[in-house]
Length: 261
Ligand SMILES: [Fe+2]
Image 1 (cartoon, rainbow, N blue to C red):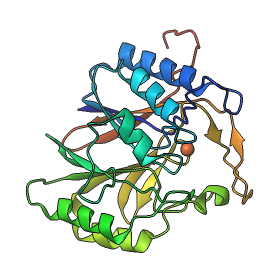
Image 2 (image 1 turned 60 degrees about the vertical axis):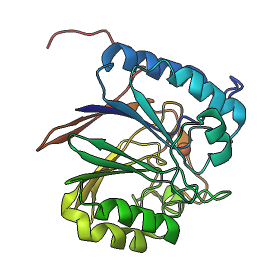
Image 3 (image 1 turned 90 degrees about the vertical axis):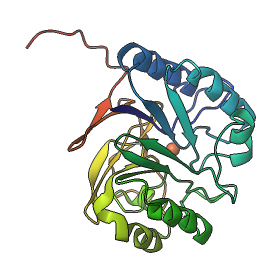
Image 4 (image 1 turned 90 degrees about the horizontal axis):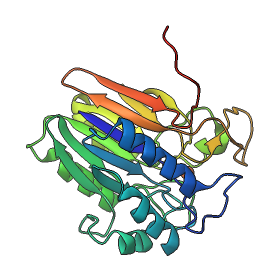
Protein backbone atom coordinates (compact mmCIF):
# COMPACT_ATOMS: atom_id res chain seq x y z
CA UNK A 1 0.00 0.00 0.00
CA UNK A 2 1.24 3.45 -0.90
CA UNK A 3 0.11 6.61 0.85
CA UNK A 4 1.10 10.26 0.41
CA UNK A 5 1.75 12.74 3.22
CA UNK A 6 1.55 16.43 2.43
CA UNK A 7 2.03 18.78 5.37
CA UNK A 8 2.29 22.45 6.25
CA UNK A 9 0.94 23.87 3.01
CA UNK A 10 0.37 27.32 4.57
CA UNK A 11 -1.95 28.45 1.78
CA UNK A 12 -2.81 32.14 1.78
CA UNK A 13 -5.72 31.90 -0.67
CA UNK A 14 -4.68 35.17 -2.24
CA UNK A 15 -1.77 33.95 -4.37
CA UNK A 16 0.37 36.18 -2.16
CA UNK A 17 3.97 35.20 -1.57
CA UNK A 18 4.81 33.75 1.81
CA UNK A 19 8.48 34.09 2.76
CA UNK A 20 9.26 34.64 -0.93
CA UNK A 21 7.40 31.71 -2.47
CA UNK A 22 3.80 31.16 -3.50
CA UNK A 23 2.19 28.36 -1.44
CA UNK A 24 -0.59 27.81 -3.99
CA UNK A 25 1.91 27.44 -6.83
CA UNK A 26 3.99 25.06 -4.73
CA UNK A 27 0.98 22.91 -3.82
CA UNK A 28 -0.06 22.78 -7.49
CA UNK A 29 3.46 21.60 -8.39
CA UNK A 30 3.33 18.92 -5.67
CA UNK A 31 -0.09 17.78 -6.92
CA UNK A 32 1.25 17.63 -10.50
CA UNK A 33 4.05 15.40 -9.26
CA UNK A 34 1.69 13.13 -7.30
CA UNK A 35 -0.72 12.83 -10.25
CA UNK A 36 2.17 11.93 -12.55
CA UNK A 37 4.14 9.55 -10.33
CA UNK A 38 1.92 8.40 -7.46
CA UNK A 39 -1.62 8.20 -8.80
CA UNK A 40 -1.68 4.65 -7.39
CA UNK A 41 -1.58 5.86 -3.75
CA UNK A 42 -4.48 4.66 -1.61
CA UNK A 43 -4.99 8.09 -0.01
CA UNK A 44 -3.30 11.39 0.79
CA UNK A 45 -2.89 12.72 4.33
CA UNK A 46 -2.81 16.50 4.76
CA UNK A 47 -1.24 16.73 8.22
CA UNK A 48 -2.12 20.27 9.26
CA UNK A 49 -1.18 23.92 8.76
CA UNK A 50 -3.18 23.73 5.54
CA UNK A 51 -3.85 27.49 5.69
CA UNK A 52 -1.36 30.06 6.91
CA UNK A 53 -3.98 32.18 8.68
CA UNK A 54 -7.08 29.95 8.76
CA UNK A 55 -8.96 32.00 6.14
CA UNK A 56 -11.90 30.86 4.00
CA UNK A 57 -10.01 31.80 0.82
CA UNK A 58 -7.13 29.50 1.73
CA UNK A 59 -9.40 26.51 2.31
CA UNK A 60 -11.30 27.24 -0.91
CA UNK A 61 -7.93 27.13 -2.72
CA UNK A 62 -7.09 23.90 -0.91
CA UNK A 63 -10.36 22.28 -2.03
CA UNK A 64 -9.82 23.37 -5.63
CA UNK A 65 -6.20 22.22 -5.86
CA UNK A 66 -6.59 18.90 -4.03
CA UNK A 67 -9.66 18.02 -6.10
CA UNK A 68 -7.13 17.20 -8.82
CA UNK A 69 -5.75 14.30 -6.76
CA UNK A 70 -7.05 10.92 -7.97
CA UNK A 71 -7.22 9.47 -4.45
CA UNK A 72 -9.05 10.16 -1.19
CA UNK A 73 -7.73 13.22 0.64
CA UNK A 74 -7.85 13.65 4.43
CA UNK A 75 -7.45 17.27 5.65
CA UNK A 76 -6.29 17.63 9.26
CA UNK A 77 -5.74 20.69 11.45
CA UNK A 78 -2.52 22.29 12.70
CA UNK A 79 -1.93 25.38 14.80
CA UNK A 80 -2.40 27.73 11.82
CA UNK A 81 -5.82 26.25 10.99
CA UNK A 82 -9.37 27.18 11.84
CA UNK A 83 -11.78 24.27 12.33
CA UNK A 84 -14.90 26.19 11.31
CA UNK A 85 -13.37 27.56 8.12
CA UNK A 86 -11.94 24.16 7.17
CA UNK A 87 -15.33 22.51 7.73
CA UNK A 88 -16.95 25.18 5.56
CA UNK A 89 -14.73 24.22 2.62
CA UNK A 90 -14.93 20.46 3.34
CA UNK A 91 -18.48 19.92 4.69
CA UNK A 92 -18.14 16.12 4.54
CA UNK A 93 -15.11 16.16 6.85
CA UNK A 94 -15.48 13.69 9.73
CA UNK A 95 -15.49 15.05 13.28
CA UNK A 96 -15.73 13.26 16.60
CA UNK A 97 -18.73 13.72 18.90
CA UNK A 98 -17.03 16.69 20.61
CA UNK A 99 -16.40 18.52 17.33
CA UNK A 100 -12.69 17.80 17.00
CA UNK A 101 -11.53 17.06 13.46
CA UNK A 102 -10.29 13.55 14.04
CA UNK A 103 -11.25 10.32 12.36
CA UNK A 104 -10.11 6.81 11.47
CA UNK A 105 -9.22 5.10 8.20
CA UNK A 106 -9.42 1.31 8.18
CA UNK A 107 -7.04 -0.31 5.70
CA UNK A 108 -5.86 -3.89 4.98
CA UNK A 109 -2.76 -2.98 7.05
CA UNK A 110 -4.57 -1.61 10.09
CA UNK A 111 -6.33 1.49 11.35
CA UNK A 112 -5.04 4.99 10.78
CA UNK A 113 -5.94 7.41 13.59
CA UNK A 114 -5.96 11.03 12.41
CA UNK A 115 -5.69 13.26 15.50
CA UNK A 116 -6.64 16.89 16.13
CA UNK A 117 -3.92 18.60 18.23
CA UNK A 118 -5.06 22.19 17.69
CA UNK A 119 -5.37 24.56 20.63
CA UNK A 120 -6.90 27.66 18.99
CA UNK A 121 -4.73 30.75 19.15
CA UNK A 122 -1.66 28.86 20.30
CA UNK A 123 1.35 27.68 18.30
CA UNK A 124 1.84 24.54 20.35
CA UNK A 125 -0.22 21.37 20.38
CA UNK A 126 -2.63 20.01 23.00
CA UNK A 127 -4.43 16.71 23.31
CA UNK A 128 -7.10 17.23 25.96
CA UNK A 129 -8.99 14.69 28.06
CA UNK A 130 -11.92 14.58 25.60
CA UNK A 131 -9.61 13.78 22.71
CA UNK A 132 -7.69 11.26 24.81
CA UNK A 133 -11.00 9.50 25.55
CA UNK A 134 -11.75 9.32 21.82
CA UNK A 135 -8.26 7.94 21.15
CA UNK A 136 -8.60 5.25 23.83
CA UNK A 137 -11.95 4.22 22.40
CA UNK A 138 -10.47 3.74 18.90
CA UNK A 139 -7.53 1.77 20.26
CA UNK A 140 -9.68 -0.43 22.49
CA UNK A 141 -12.08 -1.33 19.68
CA UNK A 142 -10.99 -4.90 18.97
CA UNK A 143 -11.48 -4.79 15.21
CA UNK A 144 -7.99 -3.50 14.29
CA UNK A 145 -4.74 -5.41 14.80
CA UNK A 146 -2.36 -2.56 13.93
CA UNK A 147 -2.48 1.21 14.32
CA UNK A 148 -0.91 4.19 12.57
CA UNK A 149 -0.95 7.60 14.28
CA UNK A 150 -1.11 10.81 12.24
CA UNK A 151 -0.96 14.21 14.00
CA UNK A 152 0.33 17.71 13.34
CA UNK A 153 2.29 18.33 16.54
CA UNK A 154 5.04 15.87 17.54
CA UNK A 155 4.90 14.77 21.20
CA UNK A 156 8.70 14.95 21.49
CA UNK A 157 11.60 17.37 21.25
CA UNK A 158 13.88 17.03 18.22
CA UNK A 159 16.78 19.24 19.31
CA UNK A 160 15.58 22.41 17.56
CA UNK A 161 14.68 24.62 20.57
CA UNK A 162 12.69 27.19 18.57
CA UNK A 163 10.28 24.43 17.48
CA UNK A 164 10.51 22.17 20.51
CA UNK A 165 8.80 24.87 22.60
CA UNK A 166 5.76 24.38 20.32
CA UNK A 167 5.54 20.58 20.51
CA UNK A 168 2.57 18.76 22.04
CA UNK A 169 2.30 20.14 25.58
CA UNK A 170 1.07 16.95 27.27
CA UNK A 171 3.29 14.16 25.93
CA UNK A 172 3.04 12.13 29.14
CA UNK A 173 -0.73 11.74 29.11
CA UNK A 174 -0.65 11.18 25.36
CA UNK A 175 1.92 8.42 25.74
CA UNK A 176 -0.05 6.88 28.61
CA UNK A 177 -2.99 6.42 26.23
CA UNK A 178 -0.81 4.76 23.60
CA UNK A 179 1.36 2.67 25.93
CA UNK A 180 -0.98 -0.35 26.35
CA UNK A 181 -1.09 -0.67 22.55
CA UNK A 182 2.53 0.21 21.83
CA UNK A 183 3.43 -3.14 20.25
CA UNK A 184 0.58 -2.69 17.75
CA UNK A 185 1.42 0.90 16.77
CA UNK A 186 3.48 0.59 13.60
CA UNK A 187 4.37 4.23 12.92
CA UNK A 188 3.63 7.85 13.86
CA UNK A 189 3.47 10.54 11.16
CA UNK A 190 3.94 14.20 12.17
CA UNK A 191 3.95 17.63 10.51
CA UNK A 192 4.72 21.00 12.12
CA UNK A 193 8.53 20.80 11.94
CA UNK A 194 8.95 21.57 8.22
CA UNK A 195 11.91 19.19 8.05
CA UNK A 196 12.65 15.59 7.00
CA UNK A 197 13.16 13.83 10.33
CA UNK A 198 12.93 10.22 11.44
CA UNK A 199 13.53 8.33 14.66
CA UNK A 200 11.62 6.58 17.40
CA UNK A 201 9.68 7.69 20.46
CA UNK A 202 9.27 5.21 23.34
CA UNK A 203 10.29 2.56 20.81
CA UNK A 204 7.68 3.57 18.22
CA UNK A 205 9.05 4.76 14.86
CA UNK A 206 8.10 8.19 13.58
CA UNK A 207 8.74 10.45 10.61
CA UNK A 208 8.20 14.10 9.72
CA UNK A 209 8.01 15.54 6.18
CA UNK A 210 9.08 18.78 4.59
CA UNK A 211 6.67 21.56 3.69
CA UNK A 212 5.91 22.22 0.02
CA UNK A 213 6.52 25.93 0.71
CA UNK A 214 9.13 26.83 3.35
CA UNK A 215 11.34 24.94 5.78
CA UNK A 216 12.67 25.36 9.31
CA UNK A 217 16.46 25.63 9.45
CA UNK A 218 18.44 22.91 11.20
CA UNK A 219 19.54 25.31 13.93
CA UNK A 220 20.03 23.67 17.31
CA UNK A 221 20.86 26.93 19.10
CA UNK A 222 18.42 29.63 17.94
CA UNK A 223 15.33 30.46 19.91
CA UNK A 224 12.73 31.54 20.71
CA UNK A 225 12.29 32.91 17.17
CA UNK A 226 11.93 30.19 14.52
CA UNK A 227 14.65 30.30 11.82
CA UNK A 228 13.13 29.68 8.39
CA UNK A 229 14.99 28.69 5.23
CA UNK A 230 14.46 27.62 1.67
CA UNK A 231 15.85 24.13 1.61
CA UNK A 232 14.11 21.93 -0.97
CA UNK A 233 10.34 21.59 -0.56
CA UNK A 234 8.86 18.12 -0.39
CA UNK A 235 6.17 15.60 0.41
CA UNK A 236 6.26 12.05 1.74
CA UNK A 237 5.68 8.81 -0.17
CA UNK A 238 5.06 5.94 2.26
CA UNK A 239 5.16 2.26 1.33
CA UNK A 240 3.60 -0.24 3.72
CA UNK A 241 3.32 -4.01 3.78
CA UNK A 242 2.97 -6.61 6.53
CA UNK A 243 6.59 -6.34 7.66
CA UNK A 244 7.97 -3.03 6.40
CA UNK A 245 7.38 0.73 6.38
CA UNK A 246 9.40 2.92 4.01
CA UNK A 247 9.17 6.74 4.03
CA UNK A 248 10.53 8.60 1.00
CA UNK A 249 11.03 12.38 1.15
CA UNK A 250 10.42 13.58 -2.38
CA UNK A 251 11.88 16.89 -3.60
CA UNK A 252 9.20 17.45 -6.25
CA UNK A 253 10.94 20.52 -7.64
CA UNK A 254 14.26 18.77 -8.11
CA UNK A 255 14.99 19.46 -11.74
CA UNK A 256 18.26 17.60 -12.24
CA UNK A 257 18.54 15.79 -15.57
CA UNK A 258 18.34 12.06 -15.09
CA UNK A 259 21.15 9.72 -16.06
CA UNK A 260 21.97 6.05 -15.68
CA UNK A 261 24.40 5.06 -12.95
FE1 LIG B 1 3.63 24.73 9.64
